[in-house]
Length: 130
Length: 143
Image 1: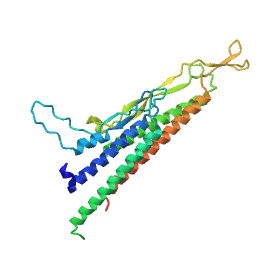
Image 2 (image 1 turned 90 degrees about the vertical axis):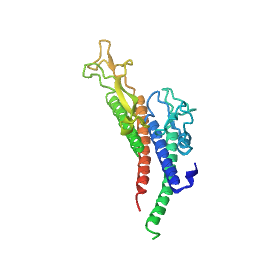
Image 3 (image 1 turned 45 degrees about the vertical axis):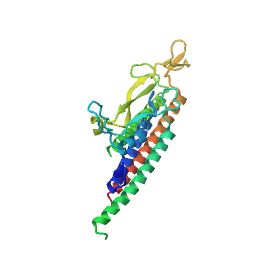
Image 4 (image 1 turned 90 degrees about the horizontal axis):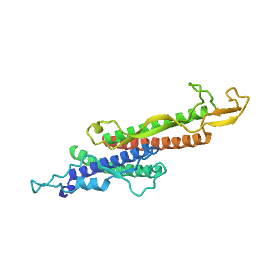
């Protein structure tokens, strides 16, 4: 967690945020694609959980008989709770998914702007402040 | 990046599926009065069965595909009862003067078509949003 203040730490965090925004986008796109599939349940990206997994201190094995923590491979998703299902068992709401996509796009844009500023600083340093 | 690629592919699979739904609804409407099909029987209303499918992507081979697409599993015939209309002058009327017509309800087809068109639109919007994201990512490499 201490390295978050360093330059590369900030860049890694921003990159992670962009990756997660893209994952939320993918999950929402999947939900939208299945808006007419009978029995399909809307899914949500595990945003906070994945973020904690990426930014938090990595789990270390203190005892050889402990099980190692699973390596988070790609953002996970779970079934969205509290949505009213239609008669065919499908509970996708178009407006909700489009809203989630717009939110994710905003998140992505924010991280991208910050990352671009970081890259500008690096380029500035490479060019000897010219 | 490949996440966005699979998201676009999921959206594209939905566009294909919804277009298929519209095509089927249109052919149902077109044949609402067809009393002779290829088998000599009145046309039977067709219905599209949709099912989820994992998007074929490199991520999928790695076992971490996040996007779920949709595909047309089958186009099935509606086995509902056919409509019957009293029309003794019709060449396909039976001995009581009734014509057996397809089990197509134009209102139902219109509603189906409207729903498919809306879903198509929503998926097109989604693809547009993803394209904006890709564009922004590409902007990072620009001076």
